Image 1 (cartoon, rainbow, N blue to C red):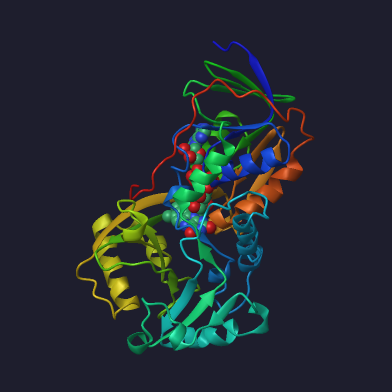
Image 2 (cartoon, rainbow, N blue to C red):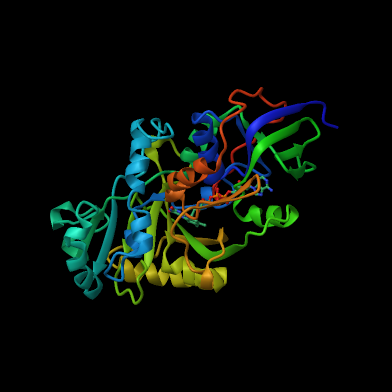
Length: 391
Ligand SMILES: Cc1cc2nc3c(=O)[nH]c(=O)nc-3n(C[C@H](O)[C@H](O)[C@H](O)COP(=O)(O)OP(=O)(O)OC[C@H]3O[C@@H](n4cnc5c(N)ncnc54)[C@H](O)[C@@H]3O)c2cc1C
């Protein structure tokens, strides 16, 4: 049974990007905060993500700015400030996997969008490249593409989770499976076998795990799951490449979103790369069998990058749900979500890139800090998860 009570300002449930980001933001703002993780840090969506920190232009492929594209426009600069040490969370040890992200297309699609991309509205967010500026995987002599460079970049999700966990230590703990949560009039109490934690705010940042928590705590907020089947490509000829393929798109969505990740087996100077394929392929592939998705992915690689030889690559896939607040028609939400009900705050960032937006939304829902420096809890530390392709 619990032996003593520790009073804190906030307890966060869940150690994906939402929980880890909020832990750092709240602690930097003077709130005594702990994070409790029931599995392994990042092991839900965050470590499976493509790490793209984007300004939403991939949601403007209908040829006009949208609410979604504009809600995210400021995010790359917010993250760059963190990487430079002038933002709300110190990410200075991290280096982007890529500072470049491209839209590329052969034929008509790019032609229609080129005028929109060139418009003053998008000044500084996207720039058409000359053939001598094309990246190595889009060789100008053979690819015959129109290529635009975006103001987006890519972080390695594993390094990001590790950095946030290092910053938040020693306030990140493994959630005891037998822990009981009691919401009271003036806060909440988490009863673990080794500690009794009394918090003014209980923050639900558990991704898909929020659904069960909401039901147990009888909090009337609804969640939606949008599923996808992401494809992982491995092979000796793959190197780092980051881009959205727009060739022949028939709806305002990238046909393929390609990111590259070190496969974790080699020293940095001899890295082997794998490609993670998202976009329409992953969305539409949610209902396909793994074998069908592999066949479809091979066809899409051949159609989007026909100048490369795809015979030697190995394809795999994994199925995952994106957990978000319920939207009419299960649509894509375009902002981070934070809602306060009593002393509980329910959160979903809805995108990795929107973590700073989530911080902006949660801070005003806090009351004044009362326990800025609580003692470190006598609970085991939570450990880091691994991406679906291993580390
Ligand atoms: C394949 C894929 C690719 C993506 N790519 C991008 C991208 O490139 N850019 C982008 O902006 N967004 C991307 N996203 C979206 C982004 O990854 C998610 O919006 C974000 O990671 C969600 O973070 P989260 O912290 O809410 O949830 P999660 O990362 O799922 O973390 C939830 C955590 O809570 C823990 N947990 C669960 N239940 C409990 C409980 N009861 N108590 C305590 N802990 C609990 C879990 O173990 C987990 O660690 C992608 C998503 C997917 C699936």
